[in-house]
Length: 271
Ligand SMILES: [Zn+2]
Ligand SMILES: [Zn+2]
Image 1 (cartoon, helix red, strand yellow):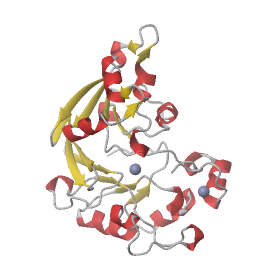
Image 2: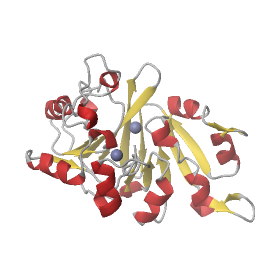
Image 3: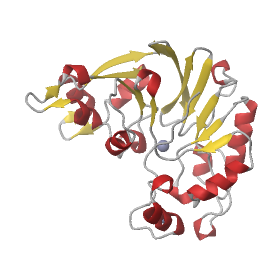
Image 4: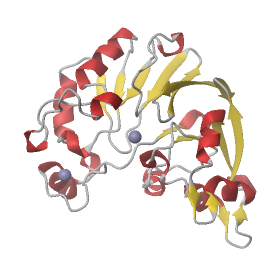
């Protein structure tokens, strides 16, 4: 959910409308500058790229095909289109790099004309490459770890370069593959905080059998997980409107711990 959620006048949304900046949150995406790699395209991705001053997207990868991560896929057309031919400017073509499973699944994402990917490939907006388990781009090794969610496989990506390791696990990562050596001892773990049990709107408490408990860890469980895999630093992303916490509230939580940060739109971190 974006913050402010349209038509919502709760404390969080009202404050975000008034203050903007880090109080305002759009969909989950990230950009790895080392290799000009965009990870996921939420509905607001064009605005996000402009706001962050991104000059070129050379590579694109998806974690999974849920709407909040792929709704903005058409950004490949917006970035690359030469209106004279309705084909891509060659120098702006984007390399789509995906685990084989995700590439097949992406074909299910359609407009009235058929699969989006077919059109984007035929016009040269993207060129597609698939891999299994791992690949590399310009000295950055990428490990793809599938999380079987039953209805789909969601991918956690581990990026490694010059002995540094980032684990990127923004959404639907339960059960987290914590026994895999690839996720151990990361310099940075980027992960969703999971369920906050208290302080929710309407004084709501998640009952034991609530569906969200099947897809999400709790915040405490996520912290424990980060300690078990020995993450040096934890960056929380995918912060939902319904957690009922503002930028200031997250700052206050982070102060209680040594190594956690809550991201905000445009947040930049070096590893
Ligand atoms: Zn709200
Ligand atoms: Zn998500």
